[in-house]
Image 1 (cartoon, rainbow, N blue to C red):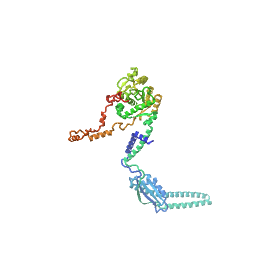
Image 2: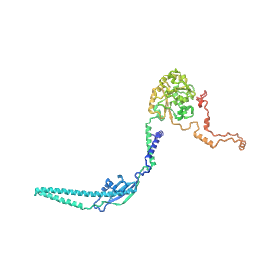
Image 3: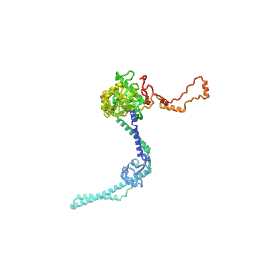
Image 4: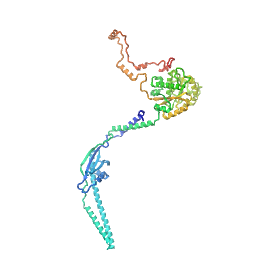
Length: 591
Protein backbone atom coordinates (compact mmCIF):
# COMPACT_ATOMS: atom_id res chain seq x y z
CA UNK A 1 0.00 0.00 0.00
CA UNK A 2 1.32 3.39 -0.99
CA UNK A 3 1.74 6.07 1.64
CA UNK A 4 -0.93 8.25 0.06
CA UNK A 5 -3.44 5.39 0.04
CA UNK A 6 -2.57 4.62 3.65
CA UNK A 7 -3.36 8.17 4.75
CA UNK A 8 -6.58 8.11 2.76
CA UNK A 9 -7.54 4.95 4.60
CA UNK A 10 -6.82 6.66 7.91
CA UNK A 11 -9.01 9.57 6.92
CA UNK A 12 -11.90 7.31 5.94
CA UNK A 13 -11.64 4.86 8.85
CA UNK A 14 -10.56 7.18 11.66
CA UNK A 15 -13.70 6.41 13.66
CA UNK A 16 -12.93 2.68 13.60
CA UNK A 17 -9.34 3.29 14.67
CA UNK A 18 -10.40 5.67 17.43
CA UNK A 19 -13.00 3.18 18.66
CA UNK A 20 -10.43 0.38 18.91
CA UNK A 21 -8.04 2.67 20.76
CA UNK A 22 -10.65 3.82 23.29
CA UNK A 23 -12.01 0.30 23.81
CA UNK A 24 -8.56 -1.19 24.40
CA UNK A 25 -7.63 1.65 26.75
CA UNK A 26 -10.80 1.18 28.78
CA UNK A 27 -10.38 -2.59 28.99
CA UNK A 28 -6.72 -2.23 29.97
CA UNK A 29 -7.62 0.23 32.71
CA UNK A 30 -10.40 -1.98 34.09
CA UNK A 31 -8.43 -5.23 34.25
CA UNK A 32 -5.28 -3.62 35.72
CA UNK A 33 -4.91 -3.79 39.52
CA UNK A 34 -5.29 -0.58 41.46
CA UNK A 35 -2.01 -1.07 43.33
CA UNK A 36 1.16 -0.81 41.26
CA UNK A 37 2.64 -4.24 40.60
CA UNK A 38 6.29 -5.07 40.95
CA UNK A 39 8.28 -5.32 37.73
CA UNK A 40 8.43 -8.78 36.22
CA UNK A 41 11.84 -10.35 36.88
CA UNK A 42 12.85 -7.84 39.56
CA UNK A 43 13.67 -9.20 43.07
CA UNK A 44 16.42 -10.63 45.24
CA UNK A 45 18.55 -13.76 45.16
CA UNK A 46 19.84 -15.38 48.37
CA UNK A 47 22.59 -17.99 48.04
CA UNK A 48 24.32 -20.36 50.46
CA UNK A 49 27.52 -22.29 49.83
CA UNK A 50 27.72 -25.96 50.90
CA UNK A 51 31.04 -27.74 51.21
CA UNK A 52 31.87 -31.40 52.10
CA UNK A 53 32.06 -32.01 55.82
CA UNK A 54 35.65 -32.57 57.14
CA UNK A 55 34.45 -35.57 59.16
CA UNK A 56 33.53 -37.44 55.99
CA UNK A 57 36.46 -39.48 54.81
CA UNK A 58 34.90 -40.71 51.63
CA UNK A 59 34.17 -38.46 48.71
CA UNK A 60 30.86 -36.61 48.43
CA UNK A 61 28.97 -36.66 45.14
CA UNK A 62 28.20 -32.93 44.75
CA UNK A 63 26.37 -33.43 41.46
CA UNK A 64 24.01 -35.85 43.18
CA UNK A 65 23.48 -33.30 45.94
CA UNK A 66 22.74 -30.55 43.33
CA UNK A 67 20.21 -32.83 41.69
CA UNK A 68 18.53 -33.57 45.01
CA UNK A 69 18.46 -29.86 45.99
CA UNK A 70 16.14 -28.97 43.10
CA UNK A 71 13.95 -32.06 43.46
CA UNK A 72 10.49 -32.37 44.98
CA UNK A 73 11.70 -34.34 48.01
CA UNK A 74 13.93 -31.48 49.23
CA UNK A 75 11.08 -29.00 48.52
CA UNK A 76 8.68 -30.93 50.77
CA UNK A 77 11.31 -31.17 53.51
CA UNK A 78 12.10 -27.45 53.22
CA UNK A 79 8.39 -26.55 53.47
CA UNK A 80 8.30 -28.30 56.85
CA UNK A 81 11.23 -26.23 58.06
CA UNK A 82 9.78 -22.83 57.02
CA UNK A 83 8.29 -20.56 59.67
CA UNK A 84 4.54 -20.11 59.82
CA UNK A 85 3.20 -17.73 57.17
CA UNK A 86 6.11 -18.22 54.76
CA UNK A 87 5.11 -19.89 51.52
CA UNK A 88 7.52 -22.30 49.77
CA UNK A 89 9.33 -21.08 46.71
CA UNK A 90 8.22 -22.05 43.25
CA UNK A 91 10.26 -24.79 41.52
CA UNK A 92 11.70 -22.30 39.06
CA UNK A 93 13.04 -20.08 41.85
CA UNK A 94 15.44 -22.77 43.20
CA UNK A 95 18.81 -23.37 41.58
CA UNK A 96 21.92 -25.35 42.53
CA UNK A 97 25.33 -25.12 40.88
CA UNK A 98 28.52 -27.10 41.51
CA UNK A 99 31.86 -25.27 41.55
CA UNK A 100 34.49 -27.83 40.55
CA UNK A 101 37.38 -25.47 41.34
CA UNK A 102 36.20 -24.72 44.87
CA UNK A 103 34.62 -28.13 45.39
CA UNK A 104 31.43 -26.59 46.69
CA UNK A 105 27.72 -26.51 46.01
CA UNK A 106 25.85 -23.19 45.80
CA UNK A 107 22.10 -23.26 46.55
CA UNK A 108 20.27 -20.07 45.43
CA UNK A 109 16.66 -18.95 45.92
CA UNK A 110 15.05 -16.02 44.03
CA UNK A 111 12.19 -14.04 45.56
CA UNK A 112 10.76 -10.52 45.39
CA UNK A 113 11.15 -10.04 49.15
CA UNK A 114 14.68 -9.70 50.49
CA UNK A 115 14.06 -11.22 53.94
CA UNK A 116 11.93 -14.03 52.55
CA UNK A 117 14.65 -14.89 50.04
CA UNK A 118 17.17 -15.39 52.87
CA UNK A 119 14.79 -17.54 54.91
CA UNK A 120 14.03 -19.73 51.92
CA UNK A 121 17.72 -20.15 51.09
CA UNK A 122 18.53 -21.33 54.63
CA UNK A 123 15.58 -23.74 54.64
CA UNK A 124 16.47 -25.27 51.29
CA UNK A 125 20.15 -25.59 52.23
CA UNK A 126 19.28 -27.39 55.50
CA UNK A 127 16.79 -29.61 53.68
CA UNK A 128 19.42 -30.50 51.09
CA UNK A 129 21.93 -31.54 53.78
CA UNK A 130 19.36 -33.53 55.72
CA UNK A 131 17.98 -35.32 52.70
CA UNK A 132 21.46 -36.08 51.39
CA UNK A 133 22.42 -37.53 54.78
CA UNK A 134 19.19 -39.52 54.92
CA UNK A 135 19.90 -40.95 51.49
CA UNK A 136 23.36 -42.05 52.73
CA UNK A 137 21.84 -43.76 55.83
CA UNK A 138 19.28 -45.41 53.62
CA UNK A 139 22.11 -46.90 51.60
CA UNK A 140 23.59 -48.44 54.81
CA UNK A 141 20.26 -49.95 55.79
CA UNK A 142 19.80 -51.34 52.33
CA UNK A 143 23.28 -52.89 52.47
CA UNK A 144 22.51 -54.45 55.88
CA UNK A 145 19.26 -55.89 54.62
CA UNK A 146 21.02 -57.33 51.57
CA UNK A 147 23.75 -58.94 53.73
CA UNK A 148 21.21 -60.51 56.08
CA UNK A 149 19.26 -61.88 53.13
CA UNK A 150 22.50 -63.32 51.74
CA UNK A 151 23.24 -65.01 55.10
CA UNK A 152 19.87 -66.67 55.05
CA UNK A 153 20.54 -67.96 51.55
CA UNK A 154 23.93 -69.38 52.58
CA UNK A 155 22.42 -71.13 55.61
CA UNK A 156 19.80 -72.76 53.43
CA UNK A 157 22.44 -73.87 50.95
CA UNK A 158 24.56 -75.45 53.72
CA UNK A 159 21.55 -77.33 55.05
CA UNK A 160 20.82 -78.75 51.61
CA UNK A 161 24.42 -79.89 51.14
CA UNK A 162 24.46 -81.60 54.55
CA UNK A 163 21.33 -83.54 53.61
CA UNK A 164 23.08 -84.74 50.47
CA UNK A 165 26.18 -85.80 52.44
CA UNK A 166 24.08 -87.90 54.86
CA UNK A 167 23.08 -90.02 51.88
CA UNK A 168 26.70 -90.41 50.70
CA UNK A 169 29.14 -89.68 53.58
CA UNK A 170 32.22 -90.32 51.52
CA UNK A 171 31.47 -87.85 48.76
CA UNK A 172 34.35 -85.39 48.81
CA UNK A 173 32.76 -83.00 46.33
CA UNK A 174 29.82 -82.35 48.57
CA UNK A 175 32.18 -81.81 51.48
CA UNK A 176 34.18 -79.24 49.51
CA UNK A 177 31.03 -77.34 48.59
CA UNK A 178 29.99 -77.28 52.24
CA UNK A 179 33.35 -75.82 53.24
CA UNK A 180 33.04 -73.10 50.58
CA UNK A 181 29.56 -72.06 51.75
CA UNK A 182 30.78 -71.95 55.35
CA UNK A 183 33.59 -69.60 54.34
CA UNK A 184 31.13 -67.36 52.49
CA UNK A 185 28.88 -67.32 55.51
CA UNK A 186 31.72 -66.19 57.74
CA UNK A 187 32.59 -63.34 55.34
CA UNK A 188 29.03 -62.06 55.02
CA UNK A 189 28.49 -62.44 58.75
CA UNK A 190 31.54 -60.31 59.40
CA UNK A 191 30.16 -57.67 57.00
CA UNK A 192 26.90 -57.61 58.91
CA UNK A 193 28.78 -57.21 62.18
CA UNK A 194 30.74 -54.33 60.75
CA UNK A 195 27.59 -52.57 59.51
CA UNK A 196 25.92 -53.02 62.86
CA UNK A 197 28.96 -51.74 64.72
CA UNK A 198 29.24 -48.58 62.58
CA UNK A 199 27.95 -45.35 64.13
CA UNK A 200 25.59 -42.99 62.28
CA UNK A 201 27.57 -41.11 59.62
CA UNK A 202 28.12 -37.37 60.07
CA UNK A 203 26.37 -34.90 57.72
CA UNK A 204 28.09 -35.16 54.35
CA UNK A 205 27.78 -31.39 53.74
CA UNK A 206 27.92 -28.27 55.86
CA UNK A 207 26.99 -24.62 55.32
CA UNK A 208 29.82 -22.19 54.72
CA UNK A 209 28.98 -18.77 56.13
CA UNK A 210 25.59 -17.04 55.93
CA UNK A 211 23.21 -16.34 53.11
CA UNK A 212 24.29 -13.66 50.65
CA UNK A 213 21.41 -11.60 49.29
CA UNK A 214 21.89 -9.69 46.02
CA UNK A 215 19.50 -7.51 44.04
CA UNK A 216 18.61 -8.78 40.60
CA UNK A 217 18.60 -6.50 37.57
CA UNK A 218 15.54 -7.33 35.45
CA UNK A 219 17.12 -5.99 32.25
CA UNK A 220 15.44 -5.68 28.88
CA UNK A 221 12.08 -4.06 28.26
CA UNK A 222 9.77 -4.33 31.22
CA UNK A 223 6.00 -4.09 31.23
CA UNK A 224 4.59 -1.02 33.02
CA UNK A 225 3.42 -1.54 36.57
CA UNK A 226 1.23 1.57 36.93
CA UNK A 227 -2.47 1.29 36.10
CA UNK A 228 -2.47 4.31 33.79
CA UNK A 229 0.66 3.14 32.03
CA UNK A 230 -0.87 -0.26 31.44
CA UNK A 231 -4.02 1.37 30.09
CA UNK A 232 -1.94 3.42 27.66
CA UNK A 233 -0.05 0.30 26.61
CA UNK A 234 -3.35 -1.47 25.97
CA UNK A 235 -4.49 1.59 24.00
CA UNK A 236 -1.37 1.41 21.85
CA UNK A 237 -2.08 -2.26 21.14
CA UNK A 238 -5.67 -1.36 20.31
CA UNK A 239 -4.43 1.37 18.00
CA UNK A 240 -2.32 -1.13 16.09
CA UNK A 241 -5.23 -3.54 15.90
CA UNK A 242 -7.45 -0.68 14.72
CA UNK A 243 -5.00 0.19 11.97
CA UNK A 244 -4.90 -3.41 10.80
CA UNK A 245 -8.68 -3.70 10.97
CA UNK A 246 -9.11 -0.41 9.08
CA UNK A 247 -6.79 -1.55 6.30
CA UNK A 248 -8.59 -4.90 6.10
CA UNK A 249 -12.04 -3.31 5.98
CA UNK A 250 -10.88 -0.79 3.40
CA UNK A 251 -9.51 -3.56 1.22
CA UNK A 252 -12.78 -5.48 1.42
CA UNK A 253 -14.85 -2.35 0.75
CA UNK A 254 -15.45 -2.03 -3.00
CA UNK A 255 -17.36 1.26 -2.90
CA UNK A 256 -16.09 3.86 -5.33
CA UNK A 257 -14.48 6.91 -3.75
CA UNK A 258 -11.80 8.16 -6.11
CA UNK A 259 -12.14 9.70 -9.53
CA UNK A 260 -9.96 7.10 -11.24
CA UNK A 261 -11.94 4.27 -9.61
CA UNK A 262 -15.20 5.69 -10.97
CA UNK A 263 -13.79 6.11 -14.47
CA UNK A 264 -12.41 2.57 -14.44
CA UNK A 265 -15.68 1.03 -13.21
CA UNK A 266 -18.05 2.89 -15.56
CA UNK A 267 -15.64 3.10 -18.47
CA UNK A 268 -16.60 6.79 -18.82
CA UNK A 269 -14.82 10.05 -18.03
CA UNK A 270 -15.81 12.06 -14.98
CA UNK A 271 -17.10 15.37 -16.34
CA UNK A 272 -17.15 17.20 -13.02
CA UNK A 273 -17.10 16.70 -9.27
CA UNK A 274 -19.97 18.19 -7.28
CA UNK A 275 -19.04 18.94 -3.66
CA UNK A 276 -21.40 17.85 -0.90
CA UNK A 277 -23.88 20.47 0.28
CA UNK A 278 -24.98 20.99 3.85
CA UNK A 279 -27.57 18.80 5.49
CA UNK A 280 -29.93 21.73 5.80
CA UNK A 281 -29.80 22.40 2.08
CA UNK A 282 -30.42 18.73 1.35
CA UNK A 283 -33.36 18.60 3.74
CA UNK A 284 -34.86 21.79 2.26
CA UNK A 285 -34.23 20.65 -1.34
CA UNK A 286 -32.39 23.89 -1.97
CA UNK A 287 -31.53 24.76 -5.56
CA UNK A 288 -27.97 25.91 -4.90
CA UNK A 289 -27.41 27.18 -8.44
CA UNK A 290 -30.21 29.74 -7.96
CA UNK A 291 -30.11 30.39 -4.22
CA UNK A 292 -26.32 30.35 -3.82
CA UNK A 293 -24.94 31.32 -7.22
CA UNK A 294 -21.50 32.13 -5.84
CA UNK A 295 -21.06 28.80 -4.08
CA UNK A 296 -18.58 26.17 -5.16
CA UNK A 297 -21.41 23.72 -5.88
CA UNK A 298 -23.09 26.19 -8.25
CA UNK A 299 -19.83 26.69 -10.12
CA UNK A 300 -19.47 22.90 -10.37
CA UNK A 301 -22.86 22.64 -12.09
CA UNK A 302 -21.86 25.40 -14.49
CA UNK A 303 -18.69 23.44 -15.17
CA UNK A 304 -20.87 20.43 -15.94
CA UNK A 305 -22.87 22.54 -18.39
CA UNK A 306 -19.68 23.57 -20.17
CA UNK A 307 -18.37 19.98 -20.21
CA UNK A 308 -21.58 18.73 -21.78
CA UNK A 309 -21.36 21.51 -24.36
CA UNK A 310 -17.85 20.47 -25.38
CA UNK A 311 -18.85 16.82 -25.65
CA UNK A 312 -21.92 17.77 -27.66
CA UNK A 313 -19.92 19.83 -30.13
CA UNK A 314 -17.43 16.99 -30.63
CA UNK A 315 -20.15 14.43 -31.28
CA UNK A 316 -22.38 16.77 -33.38
CA UNK A 317 -25.53 15.79 -31.55
CA UNK A 318 -27.16 19.12 -32.22
CA UNK A 319 -26.80 19.49 -35.97
CA UNK A 320 -29.56 21.75 -37.16
CA UNK A 321 -30.98 22.42 -33.71
CA UNK A 322 -28.56 24.96 -32.32
CA UNK A 323 -29.51 28.59 -32.29
CA UNK A 324 -26.84 31.08 -33.13
CA UNK A 325 -25.23 32.56 -30.07
CA UNK A 326 -26.34 29.80 -27.75
CA UNK A 327 -24.23 27.04 -26.28
CA UNK A 328 -24.96 23.64 -27.80
CA UNK A 329 -26.43 21.12 -25.37
CA UNK A 330 -28.05 17.76 -26.23
CA UNK A 331 -31.75 18.33 -26.94
CA UNK A 332 -32.80 15.32 -24.84
CA UNK A 333 -30.44 14.34 -22.01
CA UNK A 334 -31.19 11.61 -19.48
CA UNK A 335 -29.57 11.64 -16.06
CA UNK A 336 -29.58 8.26 -14.32
CA UNK A 337 -27.65 6.28 -11.72
CA UNK A 338 -26.84 2.74 -10.70
CA UNK A 339 -28.68 2.83 -7.38
CA UNK A 340 -30.78 5.28 -5.41
CA UNK A 341 -29.43 8.32 -3.52
CA UNK A 342 -26.84 9.08 -6.20
CA UNK A 343 -27.80 12.75 -6.59
CA UNK A 344 -29.35 12.45 -10.06
CA UNK A 345 -32.44 14.56 -9.25
CA UNK A 346 -30.26 17.26 -7.72
CA UNK A 347 -28.03 17.15 -10.79
CA UNK A 348 -30.98 17.49 -13.17
CA UNK A 349 -32.56 20.55 -11.53
CA UNK A 350 -29.26 22.37 -10.95
CA UNK A 351 -28.10 21.61 -14.48
CA UNK A 352 -31.39 22.99 -15.75
CA UNK A 353 -30.86 26.19 -13.80
CA UNK A 354 -27.28 26.44 -15.09
CA UNK A 355 -28.44 26.00 -18.71
CA UNK A 356 -31.18 28.59 -18.16
CA UNK A 357 -28.52 31.11 -17.20
CA UNK A 358 -27.36 31.09 -20.83
CA UNK A 359 -30.81 32.19 -22.03
CA UNK A 360 -31.99 28.80 -23.19
CA UNK A 361 -35.39 27.37 -22.32
CA UNK A 362 -35.24 24.06 -20.45
CA UNK A 363 -37.92 21.47 -19.92
CA UNK A 364 -37.37 19.00 -17.06
CA UNK A 365 -39.26 15.70 -17.29
CA UNK A 366 -39.26 13.76 -14.02
CA UNK A 367 -39.40 10.11 -15.07
CA UNK A 368 -38.49 8.78 -11.63
CA UNK A 369 -42.04 7.55 -11.31
CA UNK A 370 -41.66 5.88 -7.93
CA UNK A 371 -39.88 8.74 -6.17
CA UNK A 372 -40.42 12.09 -7.94
CA UNK A 373 -38.49 14.94 -6.33
CA UNK A 374 -37.82 17.53 -9.05
CA UNK A 375 -40.88 19.59 -8.07
CA UNK A 376 -39.46 20.02 -4.54
CA UNK A 377 -36.39 21.81 -5.93
CA UNK A 378 -38.15 23.90 -8.58
CA UNK A 379 -41.22 24.93 -6.54
CA UNK A 380 -43.51 23.80 -9.32
CA UNK A 381 -47.00 25.25 -9.34
CA UNK A 382 -49.92 22.88 -8.82
CA UNK A 383 -51.34 21.30 -11.92
CA UNK A 384 -51.68 18.16 -13.96
CA UNK A 385 -48.88 15.61 -14.25
CA UNK A 386 -47.80 12.25 -15.56
CA UNK A 387 -50.17 10.37 -13.27
CA UNK A 388 -53.13 11.97 -15.11
CA UNK A 389 -51.96 10.33 -18.34
CA UNK A 390 -52.38 6.92 -16.75
CA UNK A 391 -55.95 7.69 -15.68
CA UNK A 392 -56.76 8.80 -19.22
CA UNK A 393 -57.79 12.34 -18.25
CA UNK A 394 -55.60 13.80 -21.01
CA UNK A 395 -54.80 12.77 -24.51
CA UNK A 396 -51.08 13.19 -24.09
CA UNK A 397 -50.62 16.77 -25.23
CA UNK A 398 -47.60 18.30 -23.55
CA UNK A 399 -49.16 21.73 -22.96
CA UNK A 400 -51.70 20.23 -20.61
CA UNK A 401 -49.16 18.75 -18.17
CA UNK A 402 -46.31 21.28 -18.23
CA UNK A 403 -45.89 23.30 -15.04
CA UNK A 404 -44.10 26.57 -14.58
CA UNK A 405 -41.41 26.79 -11.90
CA UNK A 406 -39.80 29.47 -9.79
CA UNK A 407 -36.75 29.45 -12.09
CA UNK A 408 -37.32 31.56 -15.18
CA UNK A 409 -36.78 29.60 -18.33
CA UNK A 410 -37.28 26.19 -16.68
CA UNK A 411 -40.55 24.25 -16.98
CA UNK A 412 -41.38 20.91 -15.43
CA UNK A 413 -43.32 17.77 -16.26
CA UNK A 414 -43.70 15.58 -13.21
CA UNK A 415 -46.07 13.74 -10.93
CA UNK A 416 -46.22 14.69 -7.31
CA UNK A 417 -47.57 11.30 -6.36
CA UNK A 418 -45.74 8.08 -7.29
CA UNK A 419 -47.05 6.32 -10.39
CA UNK A 420 -48.22 2.79 -9.70
CA UNK A 421 -48.09 1.72 -13.35
CA UNK A 422 -44.99 3.31 -14.92
CA UNK A 423 -45.29 1.16 -18.04
CA UNK A 424 -48.37 3.10 -19.16
CA UNK A 425 -46.50 6.38 -18.85
CA UNK A 426 -43.39 5.05 -20.61
CA UNK A 427 -45.52 4.00 -23.56
CA UNK A 428 -46.57 7.64 -24.03
CA UNK A 429 -43.05 9.06 -23.64
CA UNK A 430 -42.29 9.13 -27.40
CA UNK A 431 -45.14 11.59 -27.99
CA UNK A 432 -44.21 13.67 -24.94
CA UNK A 433 -40.54 13.89 -25.92
CA UNK A 434 -41.44 14.70 -29.54
CA UNK A 435 -43.55 17.64 -28.35
CA UNK A 436 -40.81 18.65 -25.89
CA UNK A 437 -38.20 19.02 -28.65
CA UNK A 438 -40.25 21.78 -30.23
CA UNK A 439 -41.20 23.43 -26.95
CA UNK A 440 -37.77 23.85 -25.28
CA UNK A 441 -34.17 24.27 -26.35
CA UNK A 442 -33.00 21.58 -23.95
CA UNK A 443 -34.91 18.64 -22.49
CA UNK A 444 -33.55 17.06 -19.29
CA UNK A 445 -35.01 13.77 -18.06
CA UNK A 446 -34.60 12.48 -14.52
CA UNK A 447 -34.92 8.70 -14.71
CA UNK A 448 -35.13 6.03 -12.04
CA UNK A 449 -32.03 4.02 -11.02
CA UNK A 450 -30.85 1.45 -13.54
CA UNK A 451 -30.40 -1.46 -11.15
CA UNK A 452 -33.61 -0.86 -9.19
CA UNK A 453 -36.29 -0.57 -11.87
CA UNK A 454 -36.70 -1.74 -15.44
CA UNK A 455 -38.33 1.41 -16.85
CA UNK A 456 -35.03 3.31 -16.69
CA UNK A 457 -33.70 1.37 -19.70
CA UNK A 458 -36.95 2.10 -21.58
CA UNK A 459 -36.54 5.83 -20.98
CA UNK A 460 -32.97 5.73 -22.33
CA UNK A 461 -34.23 4.64 -25.75
CA UNK A 462 -35.91 8.00 -26.39
CA UNK A 463 -32.94 10.16 -25.38
CA UNK A 464 -30.08 11.56 -27.44
CA UNK A 465 -27.49 11.22 -24.67
CA UNK A 466 -27.17 9.99 -21.10
CA UNK A 467 -25.35 11.18 -18.06
CA UNK A 468 -24.59 8.94 -15.07
CA UNK A 469 -24.66 10.28 -11.50
CA UNK A 470 -22.48 8.53 -8.93
CA UNK A 471 -22.21 9.53 -5.28
CA UNK A 472 -18.90 9.03 -3.53
CA UNK A 473 -18.96 6.02 -1.21
CA UNK A 474 -22.41 4.79 -2.34
CA UNK A 475 -21.88 2.77 -5.51
CA UNK A 476 -19.80 -0.40 -5.45
CA UNK A 477 -17.56 -1.53 -8.26
CA UNK A 478 -19.88 -4.41 -9.17
CA UNK A 479 -22.92 -2.12 -9.34
CA UNK A 480 -21.05 0.26 -11.62
CA UNK A 481 -20.07 -2.56 -13.97
CA UNK A 482 -23.66 -3.82 -14.15
CA UNK A 483 -24.94 -0.30 -14.84
CA UNK A 484 -22.34 0.16 -17.60
CA UNK A 485 -23.53 -3.04 -19.30
CA UNK A 486 -27.15 -1.87 -19.21
CA UNK A 487 -26.16 1.50 -20.66
CA UNK A 488 -24.26 -0.18 -23.46
CA UNK A 489 -27.29 -2.34 -24.33
CA UNK A 490 -29.54 0.72 -24.43
CA UNK A 491 -27.61 2.04 -27.45
CA UNK A 492 -27.53 5.64 -26.22
CA UNK A 493 -24.69 8.16 -26.38
CA UNK A 494 -22.91 8.20 -23.00
CA UNK A 495 -21.43 11.59 -22.15
CA UNK A 496 -19.77 10.78 -18.85
CA UNK A 497 -20.16 10.56 -15.09
CA UNK A 498 -21.07 13.25 -12.57
CA UNK A 499 -19.29 12.50 -9.30
CA UNK A 500 -21.43 13.87 -6.48
CA UNK A 501 -20.85 14.20 -2.76
CA UNK A 502 -17.12 14.87 -2.99
CA UNK A 503 -15.16 16.58 -0.24
CA UNK A 504 -16.38 20.06 0.59
CA UNK A 505 -14.36 23.05 -0.53
CA UNK A 506 -12.82 24.51 2.62
CA UNK A 507 -11.52 27.70 1.08
CA UNK A 508 -13.24 30.94 0.18
CA UNK A 509 -15.12 31.10 -3.12
CA UNK A 510 -13.37 33.09 -5.79
CA UNK A 511 -14.16 36.80 -5.68
CA UNK A 512 -15.52 36.82 -2.13
CA UNK A 513 -13.78 38.17 0.98
CA UNK A 514 -12.48 35.55 3.33
CA UNK A 515 -13.86 35.11 6.83
CA UNK A 516 -10.56 36.24 8.25
CA UNK A 517 -10.77 39.46 6.30
CA UNK A 518 -14.35 40.11 7.42
CA UNK A 519 -13.41 39.43 11.03
CA UNK A 520 -10.38 41.71 10.75
CA UNK A 521 -12.59 44.46 9.33
CA UNK A 522 -14.92 44.19 12.30
CA UNK A 523 -12.04 44.28 14.77
CA UNK A 524 -10.50 47.32 13.13
CA UNK A 525 -13.84 49.13 13.09
CA UNK A 526 -14.27 48.39 16.79
CA UNK A 527 -10.74 49.55 17.65
CA UNK A 528 -10.70 52.60 15.37
CA UNK A 529 -14.25 53.82 14.72
CA UNK A 530 -14.96 55.85 11.57
CA UNK A 531 -13.79 59.46 11.59
CA UNK A 532 -16.69 61.87 12.14
CA UNK A 533 -17.09 65.30 10.64
CA UNK A 534 -15.49 67.88 12.97
CA UNK A 535 -16.42 71.01 10.96
CA UNK A 536 -17.41 72.84 14.14
CA UNK A 537 -13.89 72.50 15.54
CA UNK A 538 -12.18 75.98 15.16
CA UNK A 539 -8.76 74.44 14.80
CA UNK A 540 -9.87 72.08 12.02
CA UNK A 541 -11.71 74.92 10.25
CA UNK A 542 -8.58 77.08 10.37
CA UNK A 543 -6.49 74.26 8.90
CA UNK A 544 -8.96 73.81 6.01
CA UNK A 545 -9.03 77.56 5.27
CA UNK A 546 -5.22 77.77 5.24
CA UNK A 547 -5.04 74.91 2.69
CA UNK A 548 -5.62 75.56 -1.03
CA UNK A 549 -6.40 71.91 -1.77
CA UNK A 550 -10.03 70.77 -1.77
CA UNK A 551 -11.25 68.62 1.07
CA UNK A 552 -10.44 64.94 0.51
CA UNK A 553 -13.17 62.45 1.32
CA UNK A 554 -12.62 60.60 4.55
CA UNK A 555 -12.01 56.90 3.98
CA UNK A 556 -14.31 54.51 5.77
CA UNK A 557 -13.47 50.89 6.66
CA UNK A 558 -15.38 48.49 4.46
CA UNK A 559 -17.82 46.06 6.02
CA UNK A 560 -17.88 43.17 3.62
CA UNK A 561 -20.93 41.57 5.20
CA UNK A 562 -23.00 44.77 4.85
CA UNK A 563 -21.80 45.14 1.27
CA UNK A 564 -22.90 41.60 0.51
CA UNK A 565 -26.30 42.22 2.14
CA UNK A 566 -26.80 45.39 0.08
CA UNK A 567 -26.03 43.66 -3.23
CA UNK A 568 -29.10 43.53 -5.47
CA UNK A 569 -29.77 40.72 -7.95
CA UNK A 570 -28.28 41.33 -11.35
CA UNK A 571 -30.83 42.73 -13.74
CA UNK A 572 -29.36 40.57 -16.45
CA UNK A 573 -29.34 37.34 -14.37
CA UNK A 574 -31.21 34.27 -15.53
CA UNK A 575 -33.65 33.91 -12.64
CA UNK A 576 -36.72 35.73 -11.46
CA UNK A 577 -36.62 38.40 -8.77
CA UNK A 578 -39.42 36.92 -6.70
CA UNK A 579 -38.50 35.54 -3.26
CA UNK A 580 -34.94 36.77 -3.57
CA UNK A 581 -34.24 34.81 -6.81
CA UNK A 582 -32.46 36.03 -9.93
CA UNK A 583 -34.40 37.75 -12.70
CA UNK A 584 -35.14 36.63 -16.21
CA UNK A 585 -32.38 37.41 -18.76
CA UNK A 586 -33.12 40.24 -21.15
CA UNK A 587 -32.29 40.46 -24.81
CA UNK A 588 -29.08 42.31 -24.01
CA UNK A 589 -27.90 39.70 -21.52
CA UNK A 590 -24.63 37.96 -22.46
CA UNK A 591 -24.99 34.54 -23.99
